[in-house]
Length: 145
Ligand SMILES: Nc1ncnc2c1ncn2[C@@H]1O[C@H](COP(=O)(O)OP(=O)(O)OP(=O)(O)O)[C@@H](O)[C@H]1O
Ligand SMILES: [Mg+2]
Image 1 (tube, helix red, strand yellow):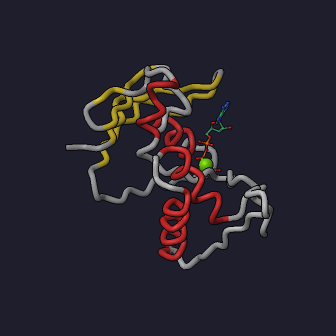
Image 2: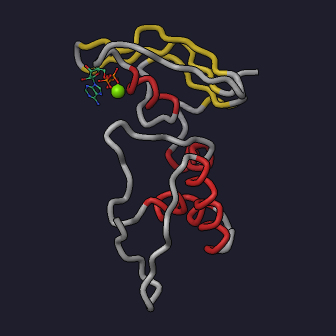
């Protein structure tokens, strides 16, 4: 079964038709690469998968649920299944890399902070990066470039 399914998506901005009947199925464990010249709609396509954009016509499914018409509140738990790296970078620039990776774990789980930071550290190490937790005496996070 597909984990993500895009069905006959149409999206236009004014006169500019960006998606014209786009369908695709993404299966669990598979890697899919979308290639194309600049301005042809790759980012627009990705934003439909996480419903940052909504189609003019067509459907977006995650597992067995249609998601393109859900409210932001109902999308919250679904979006927790996604990692999304924005093209222009969208890290919290007041936080260091470890704190950025730990942020969603702290926000969306009941794990103790220490455990959340351990997990974040492990994830950074998986990609050859590492981070250091920096807090002052009051527990306030300080910038650590
Ligand atoms: N929110 C928006 N409002 C109006 N036009 C938009 C919007 N988002 C994207 N576009 C337009 O849709 C088209 C496709 O944009 P998109 O960002 O998906 O391209 P891309 O394939 O990701 O390009 P690149 O390779 O440069 O990242 C472009 O012409 C862009 O200007
Ligand atoms: Mg893009």
